[in-house]
Image (cartoon, rainbow, N blue to C red; front, side, top):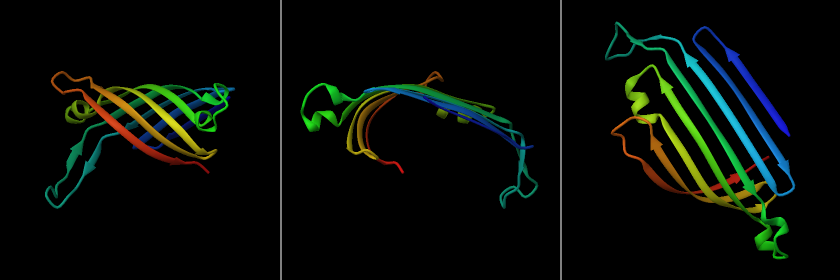
Length: 150
């Protein structure tokens, strides 16, 4: 089991998070939580040389994920490399109504990973995003990724 904690605070921003992973045989579980806050800022631009006061923002996100590597299902090398995955997460932002409307969401992902090597994976999946603000339509996405770890 791995556990990672992070905390950082300055006068303007603070960050905190925890990451945990557990693997037993072909089963893997992961969890990550992040929290950040930004204090009010004065932003000066060419369009607004006197400055614009940006409000305090708070962002919070988390996800939990389960996967099962099909390494003990059959003798097929191709099947051994497959890993079905399911993930659920939430993201919230407060302090600015436009950002909250566009970004606060729940996500559900189902996918299938194919491990080309111990540190190289291809991923295919479906993601459903349900926005928490009334009137913002939900989305369904098809995703493909290539990942490399080192």
